[in-house]
Length: 223
Ligand code: DC
Image (cartoon, rainbow, N blue to C red; front, side, top):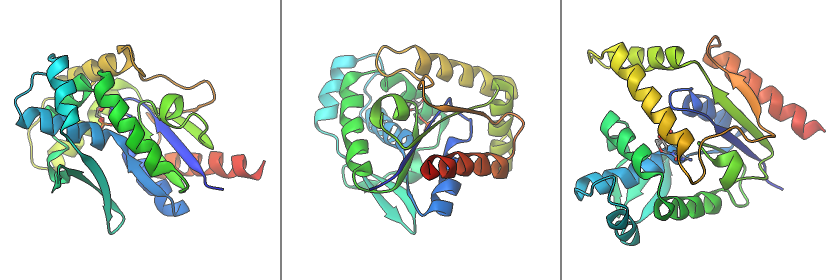
């Protein structure tokens, strides 16, 4: 029997950092589903397809292939045979991913791939609809959130560390827009599954959140 941990929550709540840590502790595979939506977004951007052109996006979905590989335990996303992992983490790609994740054509394709990846393997998967749609029978579901202020501050610090000169107010606005998009779309909007544990990381560090999730998991499998 295999185990699965679903982590959902808004942008910047720390899902991927925490999921990677938990995966390492438990020896699980980590699947970053946001990276798949981002890879599709890279394709739409490269092809010059407008995010509002639903038909164009649906057509493009027919000719795009997204695959996942692991290199030294790190997830790599292969788009039509090319490794695009280094192109995924820009604000432009994040915005496009959020805008195009609303379409059934995009979601159907990626949800299928995500379920295939989880089948028969111990997995921790993060995203927006993992507990509600992709893995409704996950062993443990976590809804990881933090205040908009805390999330904007973390993103700001990350960019400053990279040598950029961001504006906190712009980052905050961007996060609010992404939250709105992700929570108000018709298909699989971001929401806490009824059986998900709520973890608010606003005043917690990475170690504390990791320990909390490991505790939730170990008490679940003991019962
Ligand atoms: O987690 P992220 O920032 O990398 O995700 C980018 C966008 O992809 C996010 O704004 C919404 C979309 N997404 C989604 O709709 N469902 C998922 N399971 C993961 C991401």
